[in-house]
Length: 175
Image (cartoon, rainbow, N blue to C red; front, side, top):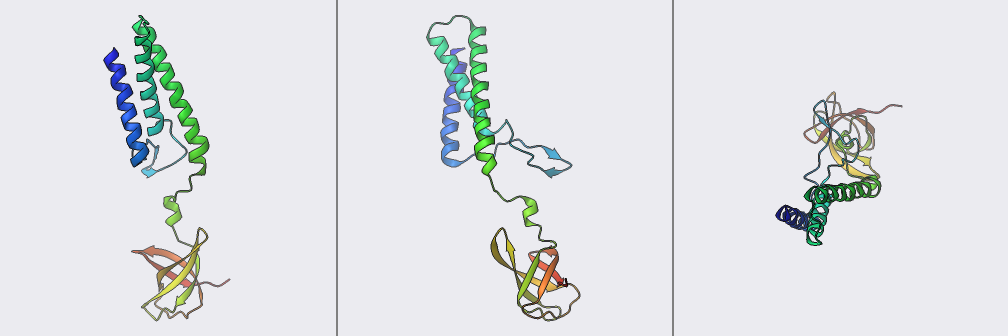
């Protein structure tokens, strides 16, 4: 039993150090809704919570064995309870502090359909031009082409109909 606790403690500790220095968002379980990846909220099964639970489980179990507690079942229950409690605390920290302020871009942030912009280089017939849009408070320029193959002058306001291979298909915007 001592070996189990020692291995859990050291594996948890080493992985925690590695994740701290190299990151570890690669091991988080998310719900799957109809084939689309969804982030409905933080999962209890995030790497920080799991590693905290494993490390505390091993450490508490090892310490209780060392101080002379003889009931293996009681040691196992106390260590498991302590591990789950600390994992829950890490989850609360993750959910209330870190995840709440996570402004990472989501897939729908890249959908530019319906976005208004202004041409900074004219579109000549079936050729390409360039437009500027404001995305998350930042001006960005992207290539643009006319939906109907018509020429659109520089400075015209346009709306993006769809994106294909990084090029926006646009039409003139009329209010």
